[in-house]
Image (tube, rainbow, N blue to C red; front, side, top):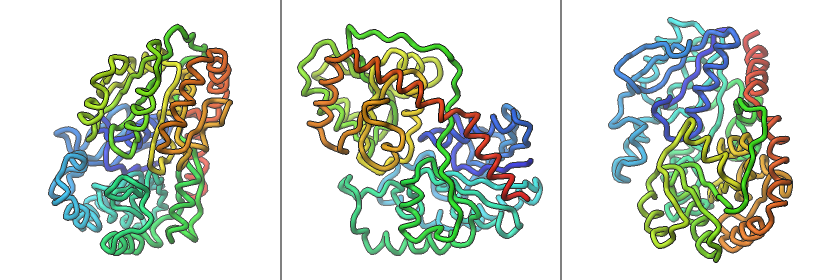
Length: 396
């Protein structure tokens, strides 16, 4: 089968887990014998190149800046970028020309901001089945995270947001043949907002590669707590820091891995506590060491997080997870089995959970066993099998 994946970013350009997932899935599909092409925004000087068997088209969108630079742009010019990105005929023409040349059996769109909503149109006009994976809430929120300017869950969108979202709904209507998301919460949220009501949907959890079959040995003389991810306000790292700093125990450590707009602010919050260490962005063997070394991973999101890859990764290294009871996180964490849930933003509850587990190595050991059992449901092999099954249904 010939499969085309469209993603606004592709490694080495990484802002989140979606683009990492697209790369892994693309390469796994190639290993299964499929022909895979990817359409993305530029990450090198080449227009077309083949990496690990995946043919990659790098299409430069006609906009005022690259999507990779979006987090660092002024709030004054971001709205203009979004308006241009709503429906960009230049992007649409480029993508349509590639699809005409390659004639894939399936087109699968992931994050589309930066390649425009017009990326949905070419497949439909050419009669190619279109799959869309929702990694966030871009179709119903300009910020993609359903948070307002105060960093709280948005209950009453502004008039401008309402207009923008209505335009998006109209442009996406009747384009998608199958909606996929790693969490049922996201699917339900999109449908409750009037999107894809008559479109078949399928929850397909992310896939994790399980390279190591042996269990990792943990030490408990010092309790090592880990955060991995973006350092934006919506990720709730400030909640974790406030909870951690309230714990009067010198045998605990907190490692924060990642980068983002709030990096300097978070470092200022932590500067008087030498138990806390920031590591910037890590990957590969360096990140693996962090998971293996850690006793707990914390996912303190204050937004409706979808299905954070960090939870899958943490489980694969035998590290239990404490996560916010919000969005799709509760679909992965089972209280007392592979981790614990706490009310999003509740510093005191998170503090109490951490203190309880710090004082109970036997509980940590029990949770570790649960992580190994949990991750067997989320192997990359199972993820690819589910994708292939859905692709084959549509391509008939």
